[in-house]
Image (cartoon, rainbow, N blue to C red; front, side, top):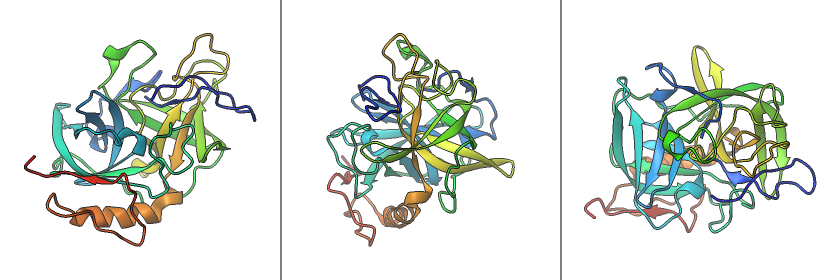
Length: 282
């Protein structure tokens, strides 16, 4: 989670960082808005990411967020914006994910599904990862996450914020991602985008008065014309959900049957050696 800024040229991305907080975002205050589906993922070692609820007891996030030897918990906020915390008991990584790489150099797919010890509760509404479709160039999308608002602003983390961005198209680095940026500044100067703590958070499309999940944040960069090394306010790199919908559905089904006394089921979608499950009584 620690590498800086980026460039969209062939010499590209010499210092893109895993995404960590919503820069120039508004604090989410609508009890019926993004707070119903967006959570934060916290490790016992102090790492912070974001995630999207895709079932009452399942969270889709970035795989690089959950590979440490640590215990993890998921925190959402109820209708009164009070925190609700649930322990995570299992994780399934995309079979192509390669542990030990940075998000920028990841040759596989930076996705993981977390199984919760119990559902967060009736105040929460899962997002449907099926039938999302691609993210078209020029399409307006929304980012939500629990990260910081700027470099050096650690005290601003753990507050849910959201902002609007625009899709700039696909970028092939070690793997293929979709990049999104501030609708006006387009990453030339510091604008809206992901920062520290937003990795794993959802990219959303407005749909029928609600939201459709279209991507998961993997990493972010500073602006092209930024004077300081930063991972914030430039490009936000996104793993498109539609391209991996089959794996998400298969592994979600596996995890819905998993318990602390069982191994994670192996499905046709395959397993990753980094998958893990914990003993409920540990």
